[in-house]
Length: 623
Image (cartoon, rainbow, N blue to C red; front, side):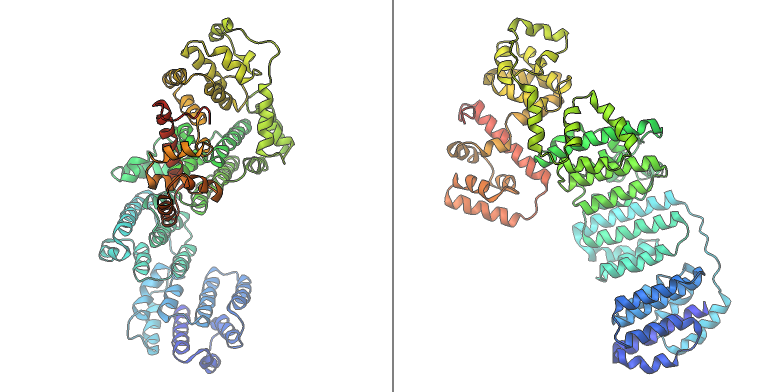
């Protein structure tokens, strides 16, 4: 510890002189340095005085450190390197000391900080420090550690501080610091209150984490570091908690959930029934196929501006068990994760907790699927990205799995024609709707209740609509539901919607009512296809004018967000000059709007259109 004290003292002396007199004033001081243990510092300071830039100095000194084998020598030399870089940059002496102290073990810090951080610290104090060092030589640090209980306390404290900082500001935390028992968290929050740059905080806290040997202690401190940095950034408290628990595996989180059952976050997120991917190797292709299929489906909805529609089909059991895909999609849809960077942080941590390599690979595929959707990746490109994680044997197995499903047409088109556009894929799907030479008589429709509807899969929607439009609404509802859950290939929902558009409006309402009772999930999806926001944009100007007279101006502003200028202009032309001007101002000052809020506003407008049509005030069938 005596060498350590000498290094710190030298750094303080050089820093003070450099700050007050300039870097060149250190030339004589460098020649006075004694002791081989200061070799890195001496060499680095000479490079600094020769005008070498900090980045190159850091690289040179790091290369010299790599040749060292002793862990303690590596640490002492890293401290010298950081001292050189900090002095070269003209850092405040106190901040430099804080950074250097982050390399110290707890017992070293306890001995030395009372000397180096006192206001009247002098060079002569080194004699007293060395006497104390001889009496208290550091022993190997071994920490018996209760990860679950201590982490639960940290989560509760961090959650409370995040909420308080968000509502009352960072300075409101100052009075609460004395109640914190954990020194690491307290020091980090003190930096935040003192308006210390986040990069400096990150370096200081990361150094402390890096010198720890126990993996649980590293995780424990990492949770605290992220809490500090995220509170400083003003992140949403819910997002902060999701980031913090990403360091915790499911079995530990289950215990923590019981301890913290009174916290609002754990009330709303039931981390109890944990889902885990099965480990058997024979299951891998099945899991991978399911991930690829769902990712493509979700990606298509996201790219069409309908990401919130998948909320109904998220597997909530898997989601609460933090299955990577379902959990990630829920974070995206709910808006809890505000950026791809945050999403990547959370999901990467969860993947890293997995020990089994095969399961980890599946979870990595899930993670990449979520990130691709989060970044609005083209569905075809995302499809090929996910396939790249598979070997040839697994790909052949997945081909067999898909060959008998309604996703087969899309799968093989994407697989063998990587450059296919979505338009190309849609055209392939429409091949299923070619006219039959022999029409199906209405008398045969009743029989479809007791046998498969395979006969319909190539029937043109206009022909089929004519065939069934006189049938009972329940009969029609059953036929339409088959397009979603029967053997019809993917895309059947669009065909079902096309058929329903061709029946009488009064009949349509009865059919929808029947579907809502018997096939609620299908009914919700079908209603979204019947008339969309894109259909609204294509209506005549006079009809648009009647609709927007019923729409709240703020909701209309949200709905127009992300539309191209030409489309926005069409809506604005249906308004008075004054109203259009106000709407433009609302859109400008609104700033960033979450995708889920935009979709909600657009669904509201679509509902207004349908209400106006039901009341006979507009006619959208002839538009």
